[in-house]
Amino acid sequence: MLVDFYQLTVSPLERVLPRICERLIGEGERLLIVAEADQIDRLDAQLWTYARDAFLPHGRVGGDRAEAQPILLSSEPDAVNGAANIALADGRWRDKALGFGRVFYFFDNARIEDARASWRALGQRSDVQRRYWKQEGGKWIQGP
Image 1 (cartoon, one colour):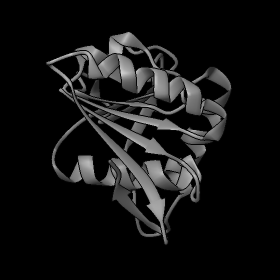
Image 2 (tube, rainbow, N blue to C red):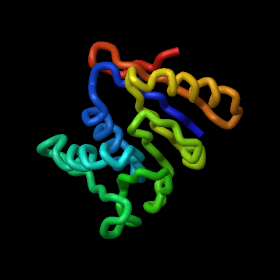
Image 3 (tube, helix red, strand yellow):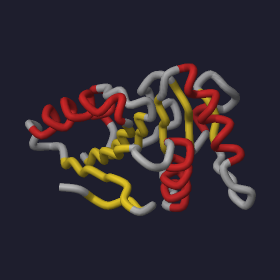
Image 4 (tube, one colour):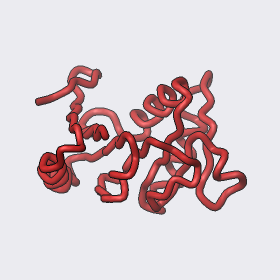
């Protein structure tokens, strides 16, 4: 399994996450986005309005046809939509994410210690490949 750590230092999550969603949808993949309940409203609105010429089909757990949504927003890491990919959008690691094929773990400076602890813990597992991404000059660069 692959865990991508994304340190948000320049662009906010609301600008970064839609691009990852676009790429996954383009590859025919599904995504579960997990966040705190108060953040879900903002992410939902952002996925509808992030670009004039793009559309990201998505829904929320408990909404109409949640199981059919290619992108699903939830406060819990349960893939009602059958997603093999999970985005932990609130900077909080959840061990249930290890049941997915790929994890996108977003964190900012307020959660950097949590991210470091998760990095170290996952480094002890032989079944997990970790990658760290940071922003430089408006681009994502894979770090050491």
